[in-house]
Length: 147
Image 1 (cartoon, rainbow, N blue to C red):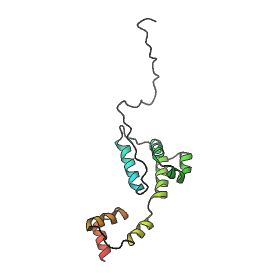
Image 2 (image 1 turned 90 degrees about the vertical axis):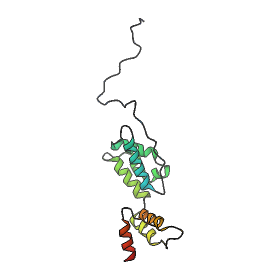
Image 3 (image 1 turned 180 degrees about the vertical axis):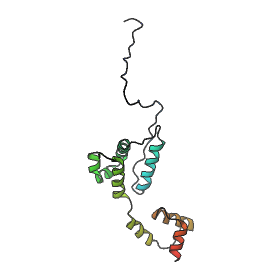
């Protein structure tokens, strides 16, 4: 073999660019049974903060499946056994939140079960109520309670 012969074969040119050497795969946290909505939000922020950002439904679906606990997968088994053709991530996310998220009725039940401030400060109490009814303003809560 002469000194001009290369040992590395030429790589075929593909239609899709290879993943950048600088790309990073962010670590996905384990599923939060007590706050599935917040876990999904953190998951989606992790996708966006990835280098490059993860935006394909199939990739987000695959990453979510890998991060899910056995108990969660058993609840959404049909969607994990066979990836949906259209919007797989959106469908899996909806199924997980349906199975483990707090329903509106459950949140209202928890809200009406609150018996005073307890040991909480007023701001801590307001924070707790806002977790039960996301997207509500403090003014709406005060006017609803005082009406």
